Length: 185
Image (cartoon, rainbow, N blue to C red; front, top):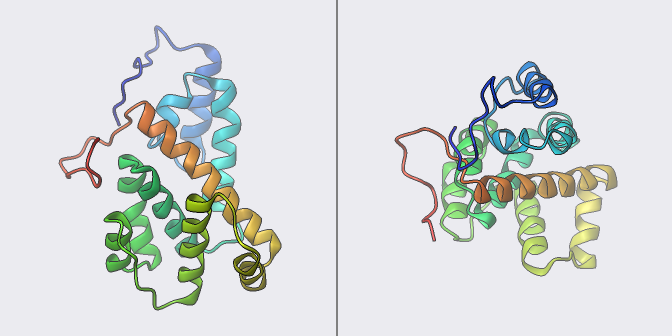
């Protein structure tokens, strides 16, 4: 990963930054992919953010297939290069069709075979576009997922919006030969 931030070395890393780095590297991720290169510059933000991220990524009531769909929809909304590059292969492994991810990436309306995927996409798109969820869509989501899982889904969207903004502002990029998924402004 690379970014526009100062690279942390043994000479310029504080004890608190090192503690957070060690915590991230020893956790379920085992790497600093994503926003962690930026967040570690502020250990007070990095510590709770990475804990929230671990919950949103590994422990919610939302199945991985649907959470990855929500993450990719968020990445497309923010045109977050690294977020997309990290999560697109995970989404495919979790069962999201490549035609769906390509439609989302290019701003087209995907065609879903699964009603739960359509519902997650509709919730995500509606929330990002309208900043609210209308009553009928809310009731449909509660009926399908339950209130606790819907809270988890909204938490996933909020967390990955924070991730996308962090990645965009600090130009965090994967070191890869792949073309960027989104045109740079």
